[in-house]
Amino acid sequence: MTARPGTLDEAGLAALLARPRLRRVLAALEAPGEETRVVGGAVRDALLGRPVADIDLATTLAPDETLRRAAASGLKPVPTGLAHGTVTVVAEGEPFEVTTLREDVETDGRHAVVRFGRDFARDAARRDFTINALSADAGGRLHDTVGGAADLAARRVRFIGDAAQRISEDYLRVLRFFRFHARYGCGPLDREGLAAAVAARDGLAILSRERVRAELLKLLAAPGAPAVAGVLAGTGLLQRLLGGVGDLGRLARLNEIEDRPDPVRRLGALAVFSGADADRLRETLRLSRSEHARLSAYAGALAPLHGAMAPLAAADIRRLVAGHGPEAVADAALVLAGEPRPVLGPDAAALLAGFASGAEPVPVFPVTGAALVARGVGTGRSLGLGLAAARRAWLAEGCPVDPAARARLVALALAAAREAAGGTPDPVVRSPRTRPGRREG
Image (cartoon, rainbow, N blue to C red):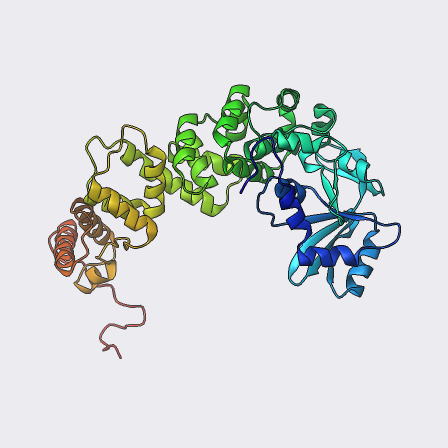
């Protein structure tokens, strides 16, 4: 259970430090004059009573010594980032990232030149937020040199030291500030942090669009996404990120009814009103092919659903699913829930739920071009017109797939194709392997 605001879950931290695989790694790295601690997000989430998946460690050991000691203890060390002091130590299949303490030498707004150090306080001071700078040693003692425990208990996301300086070291911290508040914050955003983030808005231009996309999708999946999106819109940052305006009302309503946060659906609710919006976001955020395809299909289903003046029946849902796919129709219906349109009748709602769960098979147009060619229709324009006429009728009838409907639609397609060809069947197009005058094998 998540700890209530104003409290921290000390038992959660103790349970984390008692994990056998973690204990084994800490024991392997123990040496006179050296120290290794659990740091960052693992400590933060344990104190909040939230599940902890990834566990990061910081150590005074040099990277080569981390490698040597891990191997000597029967663990599997992997040199995943030796240049940055990071070794992944695998204990019984579970990876632990172990990084030598560091100090910043030079920063350029996105990358830093660092040197290895031995001071946990200086290592903590180079992090972004106070709640991410907590550490815990093998004996269970919590170390806090920047006020992170108090901020965590208050659910306050605050930069370490001067907010503007922290952001100038890495402009991705502008987006992380909003994302972390949406995930961990409570109440208004930290005033100094907000002012610094808005002032540094031009620095977003140096970030890769892929990194912006990743941060925005994580933000949208957080519980506080609607409120934070409202702040982003009010400061003009949301328009910079999306390349257009957002519908904050739809995002807020979706946040209330979703069983599980779906960041791509939430992006659609916030920023997609037509196929052109999906195309713009593909370029602005460097969406993946599957994300763009999903938002395009969602946009296609959104228009007829939102424009439906009369209550929708089961046949209407079958038509929409046949045209746009079950996921797109379910997404659009969920986003539009709470708006005056559409209105789904009981049968329509039950059918849509069946499509969304996979219990109801998606209707497939039962007429194929091969079936018409076998009946004498050529492969030219008349074939396409015949199939199009049959598909229009199929959609109008609610997408039936029974044998009688198939026979009726084939007959309609043949008639339309023959009419397009001038009243007679098109010449049969033979296979390239079939020679005139020779019987097929």
